[in-house]
Image 1 (tube, rainbow over the protein chains, first blue to last red):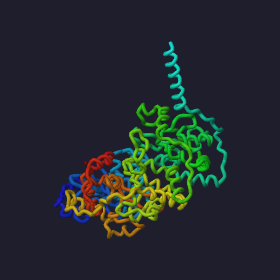
Image 2 (cartoon, rainbow over the protein chains, first blue to last red):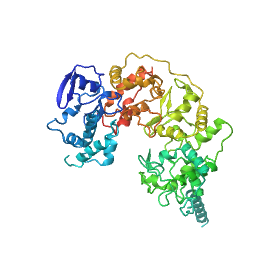
Image 3 (cartoon, rainbow over the protein chains, first blue to last red):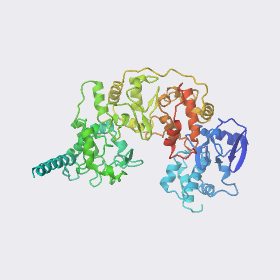
Image 4 (cartoon, chains in turn cyan, blue):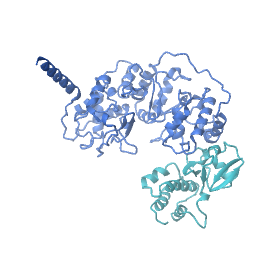
Length: 153
Length: 419
Protein backbone atom coordinates (compact mmCIF):
# COMPACT_ATOMS: atom_id res chain seq x y z
CA UNK A 1 0.00 0.00 0.00
CA UNK A 2 1.29 3.42 -0.95
CA UNK A 3 -0.29 6.65 0.22
CA UNK A 4 -1.11 9.18 -2.45
CA UNK A 5 -2.81 12.54 -1.98
CA UNK A 6 -4.88 13.56 -5.01
CA UNK A 7 -7.10 16.65 -5.15
CA UNK A 8 -6.97 16.93 -1.38
CA UNK A 9 -7.99 13.34 -0.69
CA UNK A 10 -5.59 10.78 0.75
CA UNK A 11 -5.76 7.44 -1.04
CA UNK A 12 -4.27 4.06 -0.17
CA UNK A 13 -3.10 2.66 -3.46
CA UNK A 14 -2.38 -0.96 -4.15
CA UNK A 15 0.16 -0.57 -6.90
CA UNK A 16 3.86 -1.23 -7.27
CA UNK A 17 6.22 1.68 -6.56
CA UNK A 18 7.33 1.62 -10.20
CA UNK A 19 3.82 2.18 -11.58
CA UNK A 20 3.56 5.42 -13.53
CA UNK A 21 1.33 7.93 -11.78
CA UNK A 22 -0.97 8.05 -14.83
CA UNK A 23 -1.83 4.37 -14.51
CA UNK A 24 -2.61 4.79 -10.83
CA UNK A 25 -4.87 7.76 -11.52
CA UNK A 26 -6.74 6.08 -14.35
CA UNK A 27 -6.81 2.42 -13.34
CA UNK A 28 -6.77 2.50 -9.56
CA UNK A 29 -8.49 5.80 -8.78
CA UNK A 30 -10.74 5.87 -11.86
CA UNK A 31 -9.84 9.45 -12.69
CA UNK A 32 -9.82 9.41 -16.46
CA UNK A 33 -9.19 13.09 -17.12
CA UNK A 34 -5.47 12.66 -17.68
CA UNK A 35 -4.89 10.79 -20.94
CA UNK A 36 -2.32 8.32 -22.20
CA UNK A 37 -0.84 9.84 -25.35
CA UNK A 38 2.68 8.79 -26.21
CA UNK A 39 3.78 7.24 -22.94
CA UNK A 40 7.17 8.88 -23.34
CA UNK A 41 6.79 12.40 -21.99
CA UNK A 42 6.63 13.91 -25.45
CA UNK A 43 3.02 15.00 -25.95
CA UNK A 44 1.68 16.25 -22.63
CA UNK A 45 -1.77 14.60 -22.76
CA UNK A 46 -1.02 13.07 -19.33
CA UNK A 47 0.01 16.35 -17.66
CA UNK A 48 -1.06 16.73 -14.02
CA UNK A 49 0.18 19.07 -11.31
CA UNK A 50 2.50 17.72 -8.62
CA UNK A 51 3.27 20.18 -5.84
CA UNK A 52 2.53 23.10 -8.12
CA UNK A 53 4.56 21.85 -11.08
CA UNK A 54 3.24 20.36 -14.30
CA UNK A 55 4.63 16.86 -14.82
CA UNK A 56 4.15 14.13 -17.42
CA UNK A 57 2.36 11.56 -15.28
CA UNK A 58 3.07 8.78 -17.80
CA UNK A 59 6.79 8.85 -16.93
CA UNK A 60 6.49 9.76 -13.26
CA UNK A 61 6.86 6.67 -11.07
CA UNK A 62 4.49 6.42 -8.12
CA UNK A 63 7.44 6.09 -5.73
CA UNK A 64 8.68 9.57 -6.63
CA UNK A 65 5.49 11.35 -5.50
CA UNK A 66 5.91 10.77 -1.77
CA UNK A 67 3.94 13.30 0.26
CA UNK A 68 3.57 15.72 -2.63
CA UNK A 69 0.06 16.86 -3.52
CA UNK A 70 -1.26 15.77 -6.90
CA UNK A 71 -3.91 17.87 -8.65
CA UNK A 72 -5.76 16.53 -11.68
CA UNK A 73 -8.41 18.13 -13.83
CA UNK A 74 -11.03 16.47 -11.62
CA UNK A 75 -9.76 18.75 -8.85
CA UNK A 76 -10.39 22.00 -10.73
CA UNK A 77 -14.14 22.24 -11.16
CA UNK A 78 -17.29 20.36 -12.06
CA UNK A 79 -19.60 20.36 -15.03
CA UNK A 80 -21.94 22.67 -13.12
CA UNK A 81 -19.17 24.82 -11.67
CA UNK A 82 -16.17 24.82 -13.98
CA UNK A 83 -13.02 26.63 -12.87
CA UNK A 84 -12.34 29.97 -14.61
CA UNK A 85 -9.80 28.29 -16.87
CA UNK A 86 -12.16 25.45 -17.74
CA UNK A 87 -14.94 27.97 -18.41
CA UNK A 88 -12.64 29.89 -20.71
CA UNK A 89 -11.68 26.75 -22.64
CA UNK A 90 -15.39 26.03 -23.10
CA UNK A 91 -16.19 29.60 -24.11
CA UNK A 92 -13.40 29.54 -26.70
CA UNK A 93 -14.39 26.06 -27.88
CA UNK A 94 -10.71 25.22 -27.52
CA UNK A 95 -11.25 21.48 -27.89
CA UNK A 96 -11.59 19.68 -31.19
CA UNK A 97 -11.12 15.98 -30.41
CA UNK A 98 -10.38 16.94 -26.82
CA UNK A 99 -7.69 14.36 -26.12
CA UNK A 100 -4.98 16.89 -25.25
CA UNK A 101 -7.24 19.34 -23.43
CA UNK A 102 -7.00 18.05 -19.88
CA UNK A 103 -3.20 18.16 -20.16
CA UNK A 104 -3.36 21.63 -21.71
CA UNK A 105 -5.56 22.94 -18.93
CA UNK A 106 -3.40 21.44 -16.19
CA UNK A 107 -0.20 22.84 -17.67
CA UNK A 108 -1.80 26.28 -18.01
CA UNK A 109 -3.28 26.03 -14.51
CA UNK A 110 0.20 25.43 -13.05
CA UNK A 111 1.44 28.59 -14.73
CA UNK A 112 -1.51 30.75 -13.65
CA UNK A 113 -1.26 29.54 -10.06
CA UNK A 114 2.37 30.60 -9.87
CA UNK A 115 2.04 33.70 -12.07
CA UNK A 116 -1.56 34.95 -12.42
CA UNK A 117 -0.75 37.47 -15.17
CA UNK A 118 1.88 35.96 -17.47
CA UNK A 119 2.69 37.80 -20.69
CA UNK A 120 2.24 36.27 -24.11
CA UNK A 121 5.86 35.09 -24.42
CA UNK A 122 5.70 33.40 -21.02
CA UNK A 123 2.45 31.63 -21.90
CA UNK A 124 3.82 30.37 -25.19
CA UNK A 125 7.11 29.16 -23.70
CA UNK A 126 5.30 27.46 -20.83
CA UNK A 127 2.78 25.66 -23.08
CA UNK A 128 5.42 24.53 -25.57
CA UNK A 129 5.78 20.91 -24.31
CA UNK A 130 2.09 20.09 -24.88
CA UNK A 131 0.96 19.08 -28.35
CA UNK A 132 -2.45 19.21 -30.04
CA UNK A 133 -2.69 17.19 -33.23
CA UNK A 134 -5.98 18.85 -34.20
CA UNK A 135 -4.24 22.21 -34.24
CA UNK A 136 -6.42 24.20 -31.87
CA UNK A 137 -3.42 25.94 -30.34
CA UNK A 138 -4.69 29.40 -31.23
CA UNK A 139 -7.94 28.82 -29.34
CA UNK A 140 -6.10 27.21 -26.45
CA UNK A 141 -3.80 30.25 -26.21
CA UNK A 142 -6.78 32.60 -26.48
CA UNK A 143 -8.53 30.79 -23.63
CA UNK A 144 -5.47 31.05 -21.41
CA UNK A 145 -4.85 34.68 -22.38
CA UNK A 146 -8.29 35.75 -21.19
CA UNK A 147 -7.79 34.23 -17.76
CA UNK A 148 -4.24 35.62 -17.58
CA UNK A 149 -5.63 39.09 -18.26
CA UNK A 150 -8.05 38.67 -15.36
CA UNK A 151 -11.13 38.91 -17.57
CA UNK A 152 -14.09 36.61 -17.34
CA UNK A 153 -14.61 34.30 -20.20
CA UNK B 1 71.16 63.66 -7.83
CA UNK B 2 72.53 60.97 -10.03
CA UNK B 3 70.39 58.31 -8.35
CA UNK B 4 67.28 60.39 -8.92
CA UNK B 5 68.06 60.67 -12.63
CA UNK B 6 68.46 56.90 -12.86
CA UNK B 7 65.18 56.33 -11.01
CA UNK B 8 63.38 58.79 -13.23
CA UNK B 9 64.77 57.21 -16.35
CA UNK B 10 63.89 53.73 -15.12
CA UNK B 11 60.32 54.66 -14.28
CA UNK B 12 60.05 56.42 -17.62
CA UNK B 13 61.13 53.26 -19.40
CA UNK B 14 58.70 51.19 -17.32
CA UNK B 15 55.86 53.52 -18.20
CA UNK B 16 56.76 53.34 -21.87
CA UNK B 17 56.85 49.54 -21.76
CA UNK B 18 53.53 49.33 -19.89
CA UNK B 19 52.03 51.76 -22.39
CA UNK B 20 53.28 49.71 -25.29
CA UNK B 21 51.85 46.54 -23.78
CA UNK B 22 48.50 47.93 -22.76
CA UNK B 23 47.68 50.51 -25.44
CA UNK B 24 46.19 49.67 -28.81
CA UNK B 25 45.16 52.27 -31.35
CA UNK B 26 41.64 52.77 -32.52
CA UNK B 27 41.32 51.77 -36.16
CA UNK B 28 39.60 54.02 -38.67
CA UNK B 29 35.85 53.59 -39.00
CA UNK B 30 34.48 52.71 -42.39
CA UNK B 31 31.47 54.52 -43.80
CA UNK B 32 29.28 51.71 -42.51
CA UNK B 33 28.20 50.69 -45.99
CA UNK B 34 29.70 47.25 -46.54
CA UNK B 35 31.33 46.57 -49.87
CA UNK B 36 29.23 43.77 -51.34
CA UNK B 37 31.11 40.52 -51.82
CA UNK B 38 30.47 37.95 -54.54
CA UNK B 39 28.36 34.89 -53.83
CA UNK B 40 31.30 32.49 -53.87
CA UNK B 41 33.15 34.49 -51.20
CA UNK B 42 30.04 34.65 -49.03
CA UNK B 43 29.52 30.89 -49.40
CA UNK B 44 33.13 30.23 -48.35
CA UNK B 45 32.63 32.61 -45.44
CA UNK B 46 29.49 30.78 -44.33
CA UNK B 47 31.55 27.60 -44.13
CA UNK B 48 34.28 29.29 -42.07
CA UNK B 49 31.72 30.85 -39.73
CA UNK B 50 30.12 27.41 -39.23
CA UNK B 51 33.58 25.93 -38.57
CA UNK B 52 34.07 28.63 -35.94
CA UNK B 53 30.66 28.14 -34.27
CA UNK B 54 30.30 31.94 -34.19
CA UNK B 55 26.51 31.75 -34.15
CA UNK B 56 26.46 29.67 -30.97
CA UNK B 57 27.84 32.38 -28.71
CA UNK B 58 26.82 35.40 -30.76
CA UNK B 59 23.09 34.63 -30.61
CA UNK B 60 20.97 35.14 -27.50
CA UNK B 61 18.32 32.59 -26.56
CA UNK B 62 15.40 33.22 -28.89
CA UNK B 63 17.43 36.12 -30.30
CA UNK B 64 18.36 37.06 -33.84
CA UNK B 65 21.31 35.20 -35.32
CA UNK B 66 24.67 36.94 -34.78
CA UNK B 67 23.09 39.86 -32.88
CA UNK B 68 24.86 38.92 -29.63
CA UNK B 69 23.55 39.09 -26.09
CA UNK B 70 24.26 35.47 -25.13
CA UNK B 71 25.57 35.28 -21.57
CA UNK B 72 28.72 33.21 -21.12
CA UNK B 73 28.96 32.16 -17.51
CA UNK B 74 32.64 32.19 -16.59
CA UNK B 75 34.16 31.66 -13.15
CA UNK B 76 34.77 35.43 -13.15
CA UNK B 77 31.23 36.54 -13.96
CA UNK B 78 28.87 36.65 -16.91
CA UNK B 79 30.17 38.05 -20.17
CA UNK B 80 27.64 38.92 -22.89
CA UNK B 81 28.56 38.35 -26.50
CA UNK B 82 28.48 41.28 -28.88
CA UNK B 83 26.49 42.01 -32.01
CA UNK B 84 28.47 40.89 -35.06
CA UNK B 85 25.85 41.85 -37.63
CA UNK B 86 26.86 44.77 -39.86
CA UNK B 87 24.77 47.31 -37.95
CA UNK B 88 26.73 50.57 -38.03
CA UNK B 89 25.77 51.76 -34.54
CA UNK B 90 25.62 48.55 -32.45
CA UNK B 91 27.35 45.89 -34.58
CA UNK B 92 30.50 45.70 -36.69
CA UNK B 93 29.13 47.76 -39.57
CA UNK B 94 31.94 50.30 -39.31
CA UNK B 95 34.68 47.72 -38.95
CA UNK B 96 37.22 47.43 -41.76
CA UNK B 97 38.55 44.01 -42.63
CA UNK B 98 41.78 45.07 -40.88
CA UNK B 99 39.88 45.72 -37.66
CA UNK B 100 38.17 42.33 -37.99
CA UNK B 101 41.50 40.58 -38.55
CA UNK B 102 43.02 42.34 -35.54
CA UNK B 103 40.11 41.21 -33.35
CA UNK B 104 40.50 37.58 -34.40
CA UNK B 105 44.30 37.56 -34.30
CA UNK B 106 45.00 39.77 -31.29
CA UNK B 107 41.77 40.05 -29.31
CA UNK B 108 41.46 43.81 -29.77
CA UNK B 109 38.25 45.60 -30.70
CA UNK B 110 38.12 48.19 -33.49
CA UNK B 111 38.27 51.09 -31.03
CA UNK B 112 41.38 49.62 -29.39
CA UNK B 113 39.91 48.05 -26.24
CA UNK B 114 40.92 44.52 -25.34
CA UNK B 115 38.35 41.75 -25.81
CA UNK B 116 37.81 39.14 -23.12
CA UNK B 117 39.36 35.75 -23.85
CA UNK B 118 35.87 34.23 -23.62
CA UNK B 119 36.10 35.21 -27.28
CA UNK B 120 38.51 32.47 -28.40
CA UNK B 121 41.02 34.66 -30.27
CA UNK B 122 43.83 32.48 -28.91
CA UNK B 123 42.50 29.95 -31.43
CA UNK B 124 41.12 32.19 -34.15
CA UNK B 125 44.59 33.74 -34.43
CA UNK B 126 45.72 30.52 -36.13
CA UNK B 127 43.30 30.94 -39.02
CA UNK B 128 44.56 31.86 -42.46
CA UNK B 129 43.99 35.43 -43.65
CA UNK B 130 41.87 34.16 -46.52
CA UNK B 131 39.51 32.36 -44.13
CA UNK B 132 39.22 35.39 -41.85
CA UNK B 133 38.48 37.64 -44.82
CA UNK B 134 35.81 35.24 -46.10
CA UNK B 135 34.19 35.13 -42.64
CA UNK B 136 34.18 38.94 -42.65
CA UNK B 137 32.51 39.02 -46.05
CA UNK B 138 29.85 36.57 -44.85
CA UNK B 139 29.07 38.48 -41.66
CA UNK B 140 28.96 41.76 -43.57
CA UNK B 141 26.37 40.23 -45.89
CA UNK B 142 23.97 39.54 -43.00
CA UNK B 143 21.03 41.81 -42.27
CA UNK B 144 22.08 44.56 -39.84
CA UNK B 145 20.35 44.23 -36.48
CA UNK B 146 20.05 47.06 -34.00
CA UNK B 147 21.10 45.31 -30.79
CA UNK B 148 23.16 47.31 -28.30
CA UNK B 149 25.61 45.26 -26.23
CA UNK B 150 24.50 44.09 -22.81
CA UNK B 151 26.58 45.14 -19.85
CA UNK B 152 28.84 42.39 -18.55
CA UNK B 153 28.36 41.23 -14.98
CA UNK B 154 31.94 41.26 -13.77
CA UNK B 155 33.57 42.43 -10.54
CA UNK B 156 35.48 45.72 -10.82
CA UNK B 157 38.88 44.01 -10.97
CA UNK B 158 38.00 42.24 -14.20
CA UNK B 159 36.52 45.32 -15.79
CA UNK B 160 40.01 46.81 -16.21
CA UNK B 161 40.52 45.69 -19.76
CA UNK B 162 44.10 46.93 -20.27
CA UNK B 163 45.22 44.27 -17.76
CA UNK B 164 44.17 41.70 -20.36
CA UNK B 165 47.35 42.68 -22.20
CA UNK B 166 49.30 40.76 -19.56
CA UNK B 167 46.98 37.77 -19.89
CA UNK B 168 47.74 37.87 -23.61
CA UNK B 169 51.48 37.84 -22.92
CA UNK B 170 50.94 34.52 -21.14
CA UNK B 171 48.45 32.83 -23.42
CA UNK B 172 48.32 34.44 -26.85
CA UNK B 173 50.73 33.28 -29.52
CA UNK B 174 49.37 35.29 -32.38
CA UNK B 175 49.74 34.45 -36.01
CA UNK B 176 48.34 32.08 -38.58
CA UNK B 177 49.34 28.42 -38.48
CA UNK B 178 48.60 27.19 -41.98
CA UNK B 179 47.47 23.64 -42.49
CA UNK B 180 50.09 21.11 -43.51
CA UNK B 181 49.36 18.32 -45.92
CA UNK B 182 46.91 15.53 -45.42
CA UNK B 183 43.62 14.97 -43.70
CA UNK B 184 44.96 15.00 -40.15
CA UNK B 185 46.74 18.30 -40.74
CA UNK B 186 43.61 19.80 -42.23
CA UNK B 187 41.78 18.58 -39.11
CA UNK B 188 44.41 20.15 -36.88
CA UNK B 189 43.96 23.47 -38.67
CA UNK B 190 40.18 23.32 -38.20
CA UNK B 191 40.17 22.04 -34.62
CA UNK B 192 42.97 24.23 -33.28
CA UNK B 193 41.87 27.31 -35.18
CA UNK B 194 38.27 28.11 -36.05
CA UNK B 195 36.84 25.07 -34.25
CA UNK B 196 38.53 26.01 -30.95
CA UNK B 197 37.75 22.58 -29.47
CA UNK B 198 40.32 23.11 -26.71
CA UNK B 199 38.38 26.08 -25.32
CA UNK B 200 36.02 23.62 -23.67
CA UNK B 201 37.94 20.33 -23.72
CA UNK B 202 41.14 21.59 -22.06
CA UNK B 203 41.14 22.45 -18.34
CA UNK B 204 41.48 26.16 -17.58
CA UNK B 205 43.82 27.51 -14.94
CA UNK B 206 42.86 30.01 -12.25
CA UNK B 207 43.04 32.99 -14.61
CA UNK B 208 41.08 31.30 -17.34
CA UNK B 209 43.91 30.26 -19.63
CA UNK B 210 44.19 26.78 -21.07
CA UNK B 211 46.52 24.83 -18.81
CA UNK B 212 49.86 24.13 -20.42
CA UNK B 213 50.69 20.47 -20.80
CA UNK B 214 47.08 19.33 -20.48
CA UNK B 215 45.60 19.83 -23.92
CA UNK B 216 42.30 17.99 -24.38
CA UNK B 217 42.37 16.45 -20.91
CA UNK B 218 38.72 17.42 -20.43
CA UNK B 219 37.09 20.10 -18.30
CA UNK B 220 33.79 21.23 -16.80
CA UNK B 221 31.94 23.89 -18.78
CA UNK B 222 28.51 25.39 -18.07
CA UNK B 223 27.79 22.63 -15.56
CA UNK B 224 28.58 19.85 -18.07
CA UNK B 225 31.69 17.71 -18.33
CA UNK B 226 33.45 18.28 -21.64
CA UNK B 227 35.05 14.84 -21.87
CA UNK B 228 38.75 14.35 -22.50
CA UNK B 229 39.38 14.04 -26.22
CA UNK B 230 42.66 12.18 -25.77
CA UNK B 231 41.22 9.05 -24.18
CA UNK B 232 38.65 8.19 -26.81
CA UNK B 233 40.31 4.96 -27.79
CA UNK B 234 40.52 3.72 -24.23
CA UNK B 235 36.79 4.13 -23.72
CA UNK B 236 34.89 1.00 -22.77
CA UNK B 237 33.97 0.85 -26.41
CA UNK B 238 36.76 2.64 -28.26
CA UNK B 239 35.66 5.42 -30.59
CA UNK B 240 36.21 4.86 -34.27
CA UNK B 241 36.50 7.34 -37.10
CA UNK B 242 33.03 6.40 -38.37
CA UNK B 243 31.42 6.83 -34.95
CA UNK B 244 33.10 10.18 -34.40
CA UNK B 245 32.06 11.47 -37.82
CA UNK B 246 28.48 10.34 -37.15
CA UNK B 247 28.53 12.03 -33.76
CA UNK B 248 29.92 15.32 -35.04
CA UNK B 249 27.76 15.51 -38.14
CA UNK B 250 24.42 14.17 -36.82
CA UNK B 251 24.64 14.47 -33.04
CA UNK B 252 24.19 10.74 -32.49
CA UNK B 253 26.76 7.97 -32.31
CA UNK B 254 25.11 4.56 -32.28
CA UNK B 255 27.72 3.16 -29.86
CA UNK B 256 28.04 6.14 -27.51
CA UNK B 257 24.98 8.34 -27.32
CA UNK B 258 23.67 11.74 -28.33
CA UNK B 259 25.25 15.16 -28.14
CA UNK B 260 23.66 17.22 -25.37
CA UNK B 261 24.32 20.34 -23.34
CA UNK B 262 26.79 22.83 -24.81
CA UNK B 263 27.88 20.27 -27.43
CA UNK B 264 24.45 20.15 -29.01
CA UNK B 265 24.68 23.53 -30.80
CA UNK B 266 28.22 22.63 -31.87
CA UNK B 267 27.06 19.54 -33.74
CA UNK B 268 24.12 21.50 -35.16
CA UNK B 269 26.75 23.75 -36.73
CA UNK B 270 29.08 20.97 -37.80
CA UNK B 271 26.16 19.27 -39.54
CA UNK B 272 26.16 22.19 -41.98
CA UNK B 273 29.79 21.62 -42.99
CA UNK B 274 30.95 19.54 -45.91
CA UNK B 275 31.57 16.00 -44.72
CA UNK B 276 35.26 16.32 -45.58
CA UNK B 277 35.68 19.00 -42.90
CA UNK B 278 34.07 16.82 -40.23
CA UNK B 279 36.12 13.81 -41.33
CA UNK B 280 39.29 15.89 -41.02
CA UNK B 281 38.37 17.06 -37.51
CA UNK B 282 37.58 13.48 -36.47
CA UNK B 283 40.90 12.24 -37.88
CA UNK B 284 42.80 14.88 -35.97
CA UNK B 285 40.94 14.22 -32.71
CA UNK B 286 41.66 10.49 -33.01
CA UNK B 287 45.34 11.31 -33.56
CA UNK B 288 45.45 12.92 -30.10
CA UNK B 289 45.06 9.67 -28.18
CA UNK B 290 47.37 9.09 -25.27
CA UNK B 291 48.91 5.66 -24.91
CA UNK B 292 46.42 3.39 -23.21
CA UNK B 293 47.03 3.05 -19.53
CA UNK B 294 45.93 0.10 -17.47
CA UNK B 295 42.29 -0.28 -18.33
CA UNK B 296 40.23 -0.23 -15.25
CA UNK B 297 36.91 -1.29 -16.58
CA UNK B 298 36.73 -4.90 -15.56
CA UNK B 299 33.01 -5.34 -15.05
CA UNK B 300 32.14 -5.43 -11.41
CA UNK B 301 29.04 -7.02 -10.05
CA UNK B 302 28.33 -5.20 -6.85
CA UNK B 303 25.66 -6.90 -4.83
CA UNK B 304 22.66 -4.54 -4.79
CA UNK B 305 24.21 -1.39 -3.30
CA UNK B 306 22.06 1.05 -1.32
CA UNK B 307 19.60 2.81 -3.59
CA UNK B 308 19.67 0.12 -6.28
CA UNK B 309 16.20 -1.27 -5.60
CA UNK B 310 14.64 2.20 -5.42
CA UNK B 311 16.50 3.13 -8.59
CA UNK B 312 15.19 0.02 -10.34
CA UNK B 313 11.61 1.08 -9.50
CA UNK B 314 12.17 4.59 -10.77
CA UNK B 315 13.74 3.27 -13.95
CA UNK B 316 10.85 0.90 -14.59
CA UNK B 317 8.27 3.66 -14.18
CA UNK B 318 10.07 6.65 -15.64
CA UNK B 319 12.74 5.49 -18.07
CA UNK B 320 12.06 1.98 -19.31
CA UNK B 321 9.40 3.10 -21.79
CA UNK B 322 12.23 4.46 -23.92
CA UNK B 323 15.47 3.04 -22.51
CA UNK B 324 14.72 -0.60 -21.76
CA UNK B 325 16.51 -2.52 -24.50
CA UNK B 326 13.17 -4.03 -25.56
CA UNK B 327 11.42 -0.63 -25.88
CA UNK B 328 10.28 0.27 -29.41
CA UNK B 329 12.22 3.56 -29.22
CA UNK B 330 15.45 1.60 -29.03
CA UNK B 331 14.96 0.44 -32.59
CA UNK B 332 14.90 3.99 -33.97
CA UNK B 333 17.67 6.13 -35.44
CA UNK B 334 20.59 4.24 -33.97
CA UNK B 335 19.91 4.93 -30.32
CA UNK B 336 22.49 3.07 -28.27
CA UNK B 337 21.50 1.02 -25.27
CA UNK B 338 22.44 2.74 -22.02
CA UNK B 339 25.17 0.13 -21.51
CA UNK B 340 27.09 1.93 -24.26
CA UNK B 341 26.28 5.49 -23.18
CA UNK B 342 29.32 7.68 -22.57
CA UNK B 343 27.59 9.43 -19.68
CA UNK B 344 27.07 6.13 -17.83
CA UNK B 345 30.75 5.16 -18.13
CA UNK B 346 32.11 8.65 -17.39
CA UNK B 347 34.30 9.35 -14.37
CA UNK B 348 31.67 11.65 -12.90
CA UNK B 349 27.85 11.48 -13.01
CA UNK B 350 27.62 15.13 -14.06
CA UNK B 351 26.39 14.65 -17.62
CA UNK B 352 23.97 11.89 -16.61
CA UNK B 353 22.54 14.22 -13.96
CA UNK B 354 22.29 17.11 -16.42
CA UNK B 355 20.42 14.90 -18.87
CA UNK B 356 17.97 13.64 -16.23
CA UNK B 357 17.37 17.10 -14.74
CA UNK B 358 17.18 19.13 -17.95
CA UNK B 359 16.39 16.52 -20.56
CA UNK B 360 17.45 17.01 -24.16
CA UNK B 361 15.47 19.66 -25.99
CA UNK B 362 14.00 19.20 -29.43
CA UNK B 363 16.37 20.26 -32.19
CA UNK B 364 15.86 23.70 -33.74
CA UNK B 365 15.75 22.20 -37.17
CA UNK B 366 14.20 18.95 -38.29
CA UNK B 367 16.71 16.18 -38.61
CA UNK B 368 17.75 13.78 -35.92
CA UNK B 369 14.87 13.73 -33.47
CA UNK B 370 16.71 12.97 -30.28
CA UNK B 371 14.60 14.21 -27.39
CA UNK B 372 14.21 13.52 -23.71
CA UNK B 373 11.84 15.25 -21.30
CA UNK B 374 13.17 16.99 -18.21
CA UNK B 375 12.60 15.08 -14.98
CA UNK B 376 13.37 18.06 -12.77
CA UNK B 377 9.82 18.47 -11.47
CA UNK B 378 9.08 14.76 -11.31
CA UNK B 379 12.07 13.39 -9.39
CA UNK B 380 13.53 14.51 -6.08
CA UNK B 381 17.28 14.75 -5.57
CA UNK B 382 17.19 11.50 -3.63
CA UNK B 383 15.31 9.82 -6.49
CA UNK B 384 17.99 10.99 -8.92
CA UNK B 385 20.76 9.69 -6.64
CA UNK B 386 19.07 6.28 -6.42
CA UNK B 387 18.49 6.20 -10.16
CA UNK B 388 22.20 6.91 -10.75
CA UNK B 389 23.18 3.96 -8.55
CA UNK B 390 20.96 1.70 -10.62
CA UNK B 391 22.09 3.05 -14.00
CA UNK B 392 25.76 2.84 -13.10
CA UNK B 393 25.58 -0.70 -11.78
CA UNK B 394 23.12 -2.23 -14.22
CA UNK B 395 24.29 -0.59 -17.43
CA UNK B 396 27.81 0.58 -16.59
CA UNK B 397 28.79 -2.60 -14.71
CA UNK B 398 30.77 -0.29 -12.47
CA UNK B 399 30.74 0.68 -8.81
CA UNK B 400 28.28 3.52 -8.09
CA UNK B 401 29.68 7.03 -8.46
CA UNK B 402 30.74 8.79 -5.31
CA UNK B 403 29.74 12.32 -4.30
CA UNK B 404 26.68 12.32 -6.52
CA UNK B 405 24.62 14.41 -4.10
CA UNK B 406 26.90 17.42 -4.38
CA UNK B 407 26.69 17.45 -8.17
CA UNK B 408 22.92 16.89 -8.12
CA UNK B 409 22.58 19.94 -5.91
CA UNK B 410 24.88 21.97 -8.14
CA UNK B 411 23.03 21.03 -11.29
CA UNK B 412 19.55 21.19 -9.82
CA UNK B 413 19.82 24.24 -7.63
CA UNK B 414 17.70 26.27 -10.02
CA UNK B 415 15.22 23.43 -10.22
CA UNK B 416 12.13 22.87 -8.23
CA UNK B 417 11.90 19.24 -7.15
CA UNK B 418 12.26 18.88 -3.38
CA UNK B 419 15.73 17.90 -2.15
